[in-house]
Image (cartoon, rainbow, N blue to C red; front, side, top):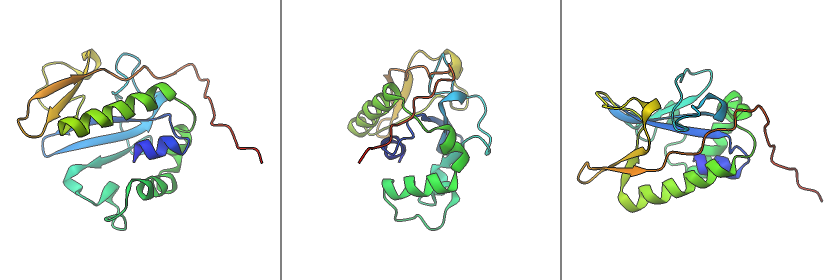
Length: 165
């Protein structure tokens, strides 16, 4: 869904995947909230600045009851309507991150893995990671994937250009 959001002009939205004791979760928020050291980590994930999904919710994405059979694009459309503040803050270009996410999704499919920046009893805090761990679902072995590029925190937001007829 996030790659669909990127194609719709919201490339400044990022994901923070993590493992919670009962489920795998992902928080989605604007690039400004993410660490310069680890571009997959944000310290604050409150409801007013980001949206979170838990795999414990299965196909009740973000608690929605009307999205159980939606595809990624349909979820993206609902996300834009239902999280307008998050999306407004995540609108603009970030080709480096969008490309990184595309590569990550390919690796996840090939390896049948899920990414995470933190989990209970983690040996290394998220801010000190030098790679993004990927947990393989079959053998539960962890792989390493490069961290995403640092977010552009200069305040300059490159807006997706309007088309001209």
